[in-house]
Length: 371
Image (cartoon, rainbow, N blue to C red; front, top):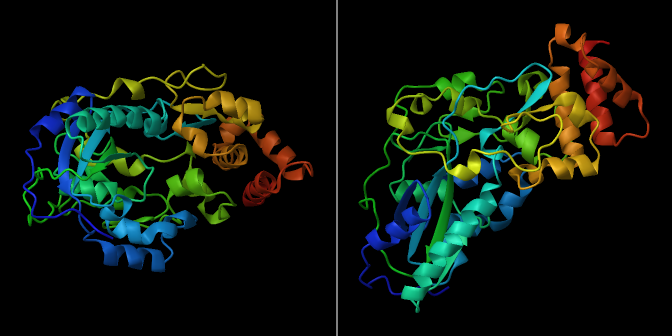
Protein backbone atom coordinates (compact mmCIF):
# COMPACT_ATOMS: atom_id res chain seq x y z
CA UNK A 1 0.00 0.00 0.00
CA UNK A 2 1.31 3.44 -0.87
CA UNK A 3 1.00 6.45 1.37
CA UNK A 4 1.61 10.15 0.91
CA UNK A 5 5.11 11.47 1.53
CA UNK A 6 5.57 11.96 5.27
CA UNK A 7 7.97 14.81 4.60
CA UNK A 8 5.09 17.08 3.59
CA UNK A 9 4.81 20.08 5.90
CA UNK A 10 1.67 19.71 8.02
CA UNK A 11 -0.87 22.52 8.10
CA UNK A 12 -2.00 24.14 11.37
CA UNK A 13 -5.07 22.39 12.77
CA UNK A 14 -6.83 25.46 14.19
CA UNK A 15 -9.11 26.09 11.22
CA UNK A 16 -10.09 22.41 11.09
CA UNK A 17 -10.96 22.38 14.78
CA UNK A 18 -13.02 25.55 14.30
CA UNK A 19 -15.11 23.71 11.69
CA UNK A 20 -15.70 20.86 14.15
CA UNK A 21 -16.77 23.23 16.91
CA UNK A 22 -19.08 25.05 14.51
CA UNK A 23 -20.86 21.71 13.99
CA UNK A 24 -21.43 21.46 17.74
CA UNK A 25 -18.82 18.89 18.69
CA UNK A 26 -17.80 19.28 22.32
CA UNK A 27 -14.13 18.41 21.83
CA UNK A 28 -11.93 18.05 18.75
CA UNK A 29 -8.30 17.27 18.02
CA UNK A 30 -5.94 15.83 15.43
CA UNK A 31 -3.90 12.62 15.64
CA UNK A 32 -1.29 11.38 13.20
CA UNK A 33 -2.42 8.48 11.01
CA UNK A 34 -0.09 5.73 12.14
CA UNK A 35 0.08 2.16 13.37
CA UNK A 36 -1.61 1.30 16.66
CA UNK A 37 0.60 1.09 19.72
CA UNK A 38 -1.77 -1.53 21.15
CA UNK A 39 -1.52 -4.17 18.44
CA UNK A 40 -0.01 -6.78 20.77
CA UNK A 41 -2.72 -6.15 23.37
CA UNK A 42 -5.37 -6.55 20.68
CA UNK A 43 -3.94 -9.87 19.52
CA UNK A 44 -3.89 -11.19 23.10
CA UNK A 45 -7.46 -9.99 23.67
CA UNK A 46 -8.75 -11.88 20.66
CA UNK A 47 -6.66 -14.94 21.47
CA UNK A 48 -8.23 -15.09 24.94
CA UNK A 49 -11.74 -14.86 23.48
CA UNK A 50 -12.41 -11.67 25.41
CA UNK A 51 -14.38 -10.24 22.48
CA UNK A 52 -17.27 -12.54 23.43
CA UNK A 53 -19.82 -13.11 20.68
CA UNK A 54 -18.50 -10.23 18.56
CA UNK A 55 -16.81 -12.44 15.98
CA UNK A 56 -17.21 -9.66 13.40
CA UNK A 57 -14.43 -7.75 15.15
CA UNK A 58 -11.86 -10.29 13.96
CA UNK A 59 -12.64 -9.78 10.28
CA UNK A 60 -10.55 -6.63 9.94
CA UNK A 61 -7.79 -7.07 12.51
CA UNK A 62 -5.12 -5.70 10.17
CA UNK A 63 -7.07 -2.48 9.67
CA UNK A 64 -7.55 -2.09 13.42
CA UNK A 65 -3.77 -2.21 13.75
CA UNK A 66 -3.19 0.64 11.28
CA UNK A 67 -5.79 3.30 10.47
CA UNK A 68 -3.95 4.07 7.22
CA UNK A 69 -5.32 0.85 5.77
CA UNK A 70 -8.81 2.31 5.37
CA UNK A 71 -7.63 5.23 3.24
CA UNK A 72 -4.66 5.11 0.91
CA UNK A 73 -2.30 7.96 1.68
CA UNK A 74 -3.89 8.81 5.06
CA UNK A 75 -1.87 11.39 6.98
CA UNK A 76 -4.12 12.61 9.77
CA UNK A 77 -7.18 11.66 11.81
CA UNK A 78 -9.51 14.42 12.96
CA UNK A 79 -11.12 13.20 16.20
CA UNK A 80 -14.32 14.61 17.68
CA UNK A 81 -16.49 13.92 20.71
CA UNK A 82 -20.10 14.59 21.64
CA UNK A 83 -21.26 14.69 25.24
CA UNK A 84 -24.49 12.71 25.59
CA UNK A 85 -25.22 12.74 29.34
CA UNK A 86 -24.37 14.37 32.63
CA UNK A 87 -24.98 11.07 34.39
CA UNK A 88 -27.95 12.22 36.42
CA UNK A 89 -29.37 9.61 38.78
CA UNK A 90 -32.07 7.38 37.29
CA UNK A 91 -35.41 7.08 39.03
CA UNK A 92 -36.59 3.79 37.53
CA UNK A 93 -39.28 1.78 39.28
CA UNK A 94 -39.12 -1.97 39.81
CA UNK A 95 -40.67 -3.79 36.89
CA UNK A 96 -38.99 -1.49 34.37
CA UNK A 97 -35.88 -2.27 32.32
CA UNK A 98 -33.16 0.38 32.15
CA UNK A 99 -31.53 1.63 28.95
CA UNK A 100 -27.91 2.80 28.72
CA UNK A 101 -27.82 6.57 28.51
CA UNK A 102 -26.17 6.75 25.10
CA UNK A 103 -29.19 5.01 23.53
CA UNK A 104 -31.90 7.22 25.05
CA UNK A 105 -31.76 10.03 22.53
CA UNK A 106 -31.53 9.98 18.76
CA UNK A 107 -29.18 7.49 17.09
CA UNK A 108 -25.68 8.91 17.50
CA UNK A 109 -24.50 7.15 14.35
CA UNK A 110 -26.85 9.30 12.30
CA UNK A 111 -26.47 12.48 14.37
CA UNK A 112 -22.67 12.48 14.34
CA UNK A 113 -22.19 11.17 10.79
CA UNK A 114 -24.35 13.95 9.30
CA UNK A 115 -22.29 16.64 11.02
CA UNK A 116 -18.98 14.95 10.19
CA UNK A 117 -20.03 14.88 6.53
CA UNK A 118 -20.66 18.63 6.74
CA UNK A 119 -17.12 19.08 8.07
CA UNK A 120 -15.78 16.86 5.27
CA UNK A 121 -17.60 18.92 2.65
CA UNK A 122 -16.16 22.14 4.04
CA UNK A 123 -12.67 20.66 4.13
CA UNK A 124 -12.94 19.25 0.60
CA UNK A 125 -14.07 22.59 -0.79
CA UNK A 126 -10.85 24.15 0.48
CA UNK A 127 -8.45 21.23 0.09
CA UNK A 128 -9.54 19.93 -3.30
CA UNK A 129 -6.54 17.61 -3.69
CA UNK A 130 -7.23 15.65 -0.52
CA UNK A 131 -9.67 12.96 0.57
CA UNK A 132 -11.76 12.91 3.75
CA UNK A 133 -13.59 9.87 5.17
CA UNK A 134 -16.00 10.18 8.09
CA UNK A 135 -16.26 7.29 10.58
CA UNK A 136 -18.75 6.73 13.40
CA UNK A 137 -18.56 3.05 14.33
CA UNK A 138 -18.63 2.48 10.56
CA UNK A 139 -14.99 1.51 10.12
CA UNK A 140 -12.81 -0.91 12.11
CA UNK A 141 -10.56 1.70 13.69
CA UNK A 142 -9.52 2.26 17.31
CA UNK A 143 -11.40 5.51 17.87
CA UNK A 144 -10.49 5.68 21.58
CA UNK A 145 -6.78 5.24 20.93
CA UNK A 146 -6.86 7.83 18.16
CA UNK A 147 -8.80 10.27 20.35
CA UNK A 148 -6.24 9.76 23.11
CA UNK A 149 -3.44 10.38 20.61
CA UNK A 150 -5.21 13.59 19.57
CA UNK A 151 -5.31 14.79 23.18
CA UNK A 152 -9.07 14.55 23.72
CA UNK A 153 -8.55 12.57 26.90
CA UNK A 154 -7.02 9.42 28.36
CA UNK A 155 -8.29 5.85 28.41
CA UNK A 156 -9.37 4.75 31.88
CA UNK A 157 -9.34 1.37 33.57
CA UNK A 158 -12.87 0.76 32.29
CA UNK A 159 -11.38 1.15 28.76
CA UNK A 160 -13.44 4.26 28.01
CA UNK A 161 -11.99 7.63 27.08
CA UNK A 162 -12.05 10.12 29.97
CA UNK A 163 -11.95 13.74 28.87
CA UNK A 164 -10.51 16.15 31.47
CA UNK A 165 -13.28 18.09 33.17
CA UNK A 166 -15.91 16.23 31.15
CA UNK A 167 -15.66 12.58 32.07
CA UNK A 168 -16.56 9.55 29.97
CA UNK A 169 -20.16 10.28 28.96
CA UNK A 170 -18.89 10.95 25.43
CA UNK A 171 -19.33 9.54 21.94
CA UNK A 172 -16.46 9.51 19.46
CA UNK A 173 -16.21 10.10 15.74
CA UNK A 174 -13.34 10.57 13.32
CA UNK A 175 -12.38 11.85 9.88
CA UNK A 176 -9.46 10.04 8.27
CA UNK A 177 -7.76 12.25 5.69
CA UNK A 178 -4.82 12.50 3.32
CA UNK A 179 -4.36 16.12 4.47
CA UNK A 180 -1.26 16.47 6.69
CA UNK A 181 -2.25 18.38 9.83
CA UNK A 182 -0.30 19.30 12.91
CA UNK A 183 -1.21 16.91 15.77
CA UNK A 184 -2.87 18.60 18.73
CA UNK A 185 -0.94 16.48 21.24
CA UNK A 186 2.88 16.48 21.38
CA UNK A 187 4.38 13.36 19.83
CA UNK A 188 6.22 10.95 22.11
CA UNK A 189 4.27 12.06 25.18
CA UNK A 190 3.11 8.98 27.12
CA UNK A 191 -0.64 8.72 27.80
CA UNK A 192 -1.82 10.11 31.13
CA UNK A 193 -3.15 7.74 33.77
CA UNK A 194 -6.53 9.23 34.74
CA UNK A 195 -7.24 6.54 37.36
CA UNK A 196 -4.26 6.22 39.67
CA UNK A 197 -5.11 3.78 42.46
CA UNK A 198 -8.88 4.04 41.90
CA UNK A 199 -10.67 0.74 41.20
CA UNK A 200 -14.30 1.82 41.58
CA UNK A 201 -15.34 0.59 38.12
CA UNK A 202 -13.65 -2.78 38.69
CA UNK A 203 -15.24 -3.18 42.12
CA UNK A 204 -18.71 -2.13 40.94
CA UNK A 205 -18.97 -4.34 37.84
CA UNK A 206 -21.55 -7.01 38.79
CA UNK A 207 -20.13 -9.59 36.38
CA UNK A 208 -16.41 -9.02 37.13
CA UNK A 209 -15.87 -8.14 33.46
CA UNK A 210 -13.34 -5.37 34.09
CA UNK A 211 -9.63 -5.66 34.68
CA UNK A 212 -7.36 -2.60 34.56
CA UNK A 213 -7.55 -1.30 30.97
CA UNK A 214 -9.24 -4.45 29.69
CA UNK A 215 -12.78 -5.77 29.34
CA UNK A 216 -13.92 -9.37 29.10
CA UNK A 217 -16.77 -8.69 26.69
CA UNK A 218 -18.10 -12.23 27.14
CA UNK A 219 -19.16 -11.14 30.66
CA UNK A 220 -20.00 -7.48 30.00
CA UNK A 221 -23.69 -6.63 30.43
CA UNK A 222 -23.54 -4.32 27.41
CA UNK A 223 -22.25 -7.14 25.19
CA UNK A 224 -24.77 -9.57 26.63
CA UNK A 225 -27.77 -7.30 26.04
CA UNK A 226 -26.73 -5.51 22.81
CA UNK A 227 -24.42 -7.76 20.82
CA UNK A 228 -25.21 -11.34 21.82
CA UNK A 229 -27.65 -12.98 19.45
CA UNK A 230 -27.88 -16.29 21.32
CA UNK A 231 -28.65 -17.41 24.86
CA UNK A 232 -27.16 -15.80 27.94
CA UNK A 233 -25.46 -17.98 30.54
CA UNK A 234 -28.01 -18.38 33.37
CA UNK A 235 -25.19 -17.75 35.85
CA UNK A 236 -25.06 -14.16 34.58
CA UNK A 237 -28.82 -13.55 34.84
CA UNK A 238 -28.85 -12.21 38.42
CA UNK A 239 -25.95 -9.83 37.69
CA UNK A 240 -27.75 -8.30 34.69
CA UNK A 241 -30.18 -6.75 37.17
CA UNK A 242 -32.71 -4.41 35.57
CA UNK A 243 -30.62 -3.57 32.48
CA UNK A 244 -32.67 -4.08 29.33
CA UNK A 245 -30.21 -2.57 26.85
CA UNK A 246 -26.60 -1.78 27.74
CA UNK A 247 -25.14 -0.87 31.12
CA UNK A 248 -23.75 2.33 32.69
CA UNK A 249 -22.51 1.04 36.05
CA UNK A 250 -18.78 1.56 35.45
CA UNK A 251 -19.46 5.15 34.39
CA UNK A 252 -21.93 5.84 37.19
CA UNK A 253 -19.25 5.12 39.81
CA UNK A 254 -16.35 6.84 38.02
CA UNK A 255 -15.12 9.90 39.99
CA UNK A 256 -14.51 11.76 36.73
CA UNK A 257 -18.27 11.64 36.13
CA UNK A 258 -19.23 13.15 39.49
CA UNK A 259 -21.86 15.88 39.18
CA UNK A 260 -19.70 18.92 39.82
CA UNK A 261 -19.67 22.46 38.48
CA UNK A 262 -16.41 21.73 36.68
CA UNK A 263 -17.67 18.81 34.62
CA UNK A 264 -20.85 20.57 33.50
CA UNK A 265 -19.03 23.25 31.51
CA UNK A 266 -19.33 21.26 28.27
CA UNK A 267 -23.05 20.77 27.57
CA UNK A 268 -24.88 17.67 26.41
CA UNK A 269 -25.62 17.86 22.70
CA UNK A 270 -29.31 18.58 22.13
CA UNK A 271 -29.83 15.40 20.06
CA UNK A 272 -29.20 13.18 23.07
CA UNK A 273 -31.46 15.03 25.45
CA UNK A 274 -34.68 13.90 23.80
CA UNK A 275 -36.08 10.37 23.44
CA UNK A 276 -36.81 8.89 20.03
CA UNK A 277 -40.17 9.72 18.49
CA UNK A 278 -42.97 8.81 18.38
CA UNK A 279 -43.81 8.34 22.05
CA UNK A 280 -44.39 4.68 22.80
CA UNK A 281 -46.60 3.11 25.44
CA UNK A 282 -44.61 1.56 28.26
CA UNK A 283 -41.58 3.84 28.02
CA UNK A 284 -40.50 6.59 30.40
CA UNK A 285 -40.74 10.10 28.98
CA UNK A 286 -36.95 10.50 28.92
CA UNK A 287 -36.35 7.11 27.31
CA UNK A 288 -34.53 5.82 30.40
CA UNK A 289 -36.57 2.64 30.75
CA UNK A 290 -39.27 0.39 29.29
CA UNK A 291 -42.01 -1.44 31.14
CA UNK A 292 -40.99 -5.10 31.15
CA UNK A 293 -44.53 -6.44 30.85
CA UNK A 294 -44.99 -4.31 27.75
CA UNK A 295 -41.76 -5.51 26.14
CA UNK A 296 -42.67 -9.16 26.82
CA UNK A 297 -45.81 -8.57 24.74
CA UNK A 298 -43.99 -6.88 21.86
CA UNK A 299 -44.29 -7.97 18.27
CA UNK A 300 -42.25 -6.65 15.36
CA UNK A 301 -44.52 -3.62 14.93
CA UNK A 302 -44.14 -2.51 18.57
CA UNK A 303 -40.36 -2.97 18.47
CA UNK A 304 -40.05 -0.91 15.28
CA UNK A 305 -42.18 1.88 16.73
CA UNK A 306 -40.15 1.93 19.95
CA UNK A 307 -36.81 2.15 18.15
CA UNK A 308 -37.58 4.83 15.59
CA UNK A 309 -34.50 7.10 15.34
CA UNK A 310 -32.81 5.11 18.13
CA UNK A 311 -29.45 3.34 18.41
CA UNK A 312 -31.38 0.48 20.02
CA UNK A 313 -32.19 -0.83 16.55
CA UNK A 314 -29.11 -3.02 16.92
CA UNK A 315 -31.09 -5.41 19.12
CA UNK A 316 -33.72 -7.46 17.31
CA UNK A 317 -37.11 -8.43 18.69
CA UNK A 318 -36.05 -11.80 20.10
CA UNK A 319 -33.04 -10.24 21.84
CA UNK A 320 -35.17 -7.55 23.46
CA UNK A 321 -37.74 -10.04 24.69
CA UNK A 322 -34.92 -12.30 25.95
CA UNK A 323 -33.46 -9.32 27.83
CA UNK A 324 -36.88 -8.48 29.25
CA UNK A 325 -37.30 -12.04 30.52
CA UNK A 326 -33.92 -11.87 32.30
CA UNK A 327 -34.63 -8.46 33.83
CA UNK A 328 -38.14 -9.54 34.85
CA UNK A 329 -36.63 -12.54 36.62
CA UNK A 330 -34.61 -10.12 38.74
CA UNK A 331 -37.60 -8.08 39.91
CA UNK A 332 -38.07 -8.42 43.68
CA UNK A 333 -40.64 -11.01 44.77
CA UNK A 334 -42.83 -8.40 46.47
CA UNK A 335 -43.14 -6.53 43.18
CA UNK A 336 -43.71 -9.72 41.19
CA UNK A 337 -46.69 -10.42 43.40
CA UNK A 338 -48.31 -7.15 42.37
CA UNK A 339 -47.70 -7.67 38.67
CA UNK A 340 -48.16 -10.30 36.01
CA UNK A 341 -44.44 -10.70 35.32
CA UNK A 342 -44.11 -14.11 36.96
CA UNK A 343 -47.15 -15.37 35.09
CA UNK A 344 -45.85 -14.07 31.78
CA UNK A 345 -42.47 -15.73 32.26
CA UNK A 346 -44.10 -19.05 33.16
CA UNK A 347 -46.41 -18.78 30.14
CA UNK A 348 -43.49 -18.09 27.78
CA UNK A 349 -41.51 -21.00 29.25
CA UNK A 350 -44.33 -23.46 28.50
CA UNK A 351 -45.43 -22.04 25.13
CA UNK A 352 -44.29 -24.33 22.32
CA UNK A 353 -45.10 -21.56 19.85
CA UNK A 354 -42.44 -19.27 21.30
CA UNK A 355 -39.07 -18.86 19.64
CA UNK A 356 -36.43 -21.06 21.24
CA UNK A 357 -34.22 -18.16 22.42
CA UNK A 358 -36.95 -16.47 24.45
CA UNK A 359 -38.53 -19.71 25.61
CA UNK A 360 -35.26 -21.26 26.81
CA UNK A 361 -34.39 -18.06 28.65
CA UNK A 362 -37.77 -18.15 30.39
CA UNK A 363 -37.19 -21.78 31.36
CA UNK A 364 -33.82 -20.82 32.85
CA UNK A 365 -35.49 -18.09 34.91
CA UNK A 366 -38.22 -20.42 36.13
CA UNK A 367 -35.61 -23.03 37.07
CA UNK A 368 -33.51 -20.48 38.93
CA UNK A 369 -36.50 -19.45 41.04
CA UNK A 370 -37.51 -23.07 41.62
CA UNK A 371 -41.06 -22.24 40.65
